[in-house]
Image 1 (cartoon, helix red, strand yellow):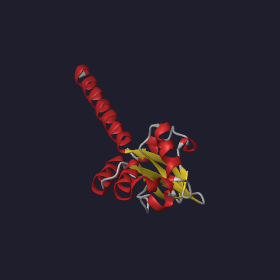
Image 2: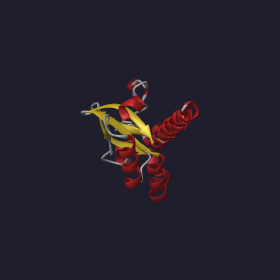
Image 3: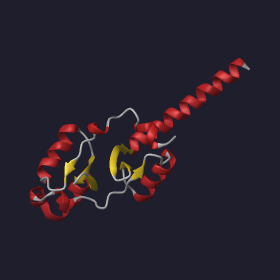
Image 4: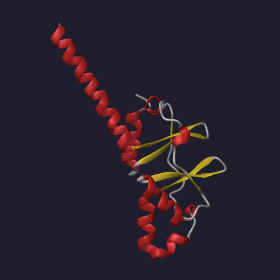
Length: 143
């Protein structure tokens, strides 16, 4: 299965993003309010980085609470590691494992059309395995 199939029912307008100039304090509040671990950081309509709870922890450890007064563009992980719509779920999982990341913006050219987490990808694989097992059981019982 490819990423396009996984995100086909998700409107890209539902993706929570922030601007590169947003205050860290405000974006941390957004992460908390939405109960999410990361979001794409945008500049002029393009993904320029990812801001995650890991970025916050790293900066808090090195700078203390002063990091909350900075802008996201100064503390985000950049450049963002991305995938394209036609990327296979297995390939995306391998990339996430290799790079030790948990979220990937999905691009169509330079336009973001989706945002997936490692949980989304693992769930899709589990669903696929369950479907295959059900088909096998059906085949065995009717053969």
